[in-house]
View 1 (tube, protein in one colour):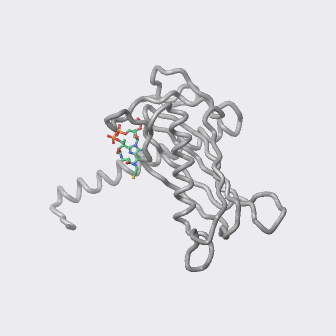
View 2 (view 1 turned 30 degrees about the vertical axis):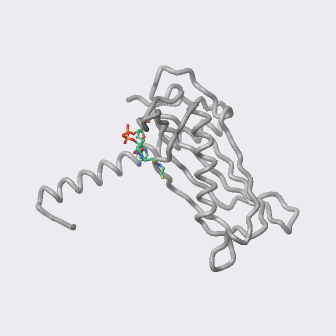
View 3 (view 1 turned 180 degrees about the horizontal axis):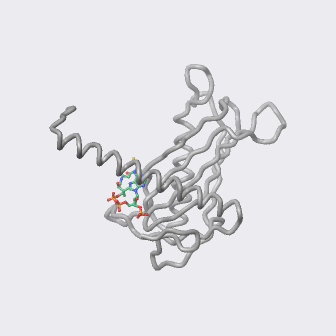
Length: 184
Ligand SMILES: CC(C)(COP(=O)(O)OP(=O)(O)OC[C@H]1O[C@@H](n2cnc3c(N)ncnc32)[C@H](O)[C@@H]1OP(=O)(O)O)[C@@H](O)C(=O)NCCC(=O)NCCS
């Protein structure tokens, strides 16, 4: 499989720009979203992140897509009740049937007239699936700006690391099994 900025992993579908599926979801945080400290629960933010990334994946791939993984979810600042949270997402990279979606979480403080602050970020991999839940090809994403091209290249690095980590762990497990080591 050859993966590069120009063509990704080449299903024979016309490419789609990053801008065509970029999506923002906005939500006002309420008292039901809080943890024991009174700030917003990380899981509430993760749900919004998964929701917006799913919308981008569906739009880019033109059909259903499922979350395959979520990684590098970072919480940079606490979110408070009343804050207006914007989760901004775009398709950073495409493979054959998978897409990396990058999400930025911004918060506008309810009691300050200041620009929104970034409170989190995450990278998710979605797989486009058919009616039987089997992976189906996605259009190659076309990064059009320098920022999109940088994000595409960074996504390729993460993809390489995910695959290498998975291979290394499978290898370790195989070797341990071959040595008769059982951790069940
Ligand atoms: C994601 C899923 C469709 C992958 O199916 P599969 O039979 O393993 O198919 P493949 O190995 O061909 O993987 C399909 C693509 O997803 C990618 N992928 C699969 N698992 C992945 C993972 N854990 N992390 C990152 N990418 C992953 C593969 O690299 C492949 O990408 P490519 O086609 O662009 O090269 C399948 O595991 C699934 O349905 N999982 C459940 C998803 C779900 O229900 N999510 C909601 C949770 S409630």
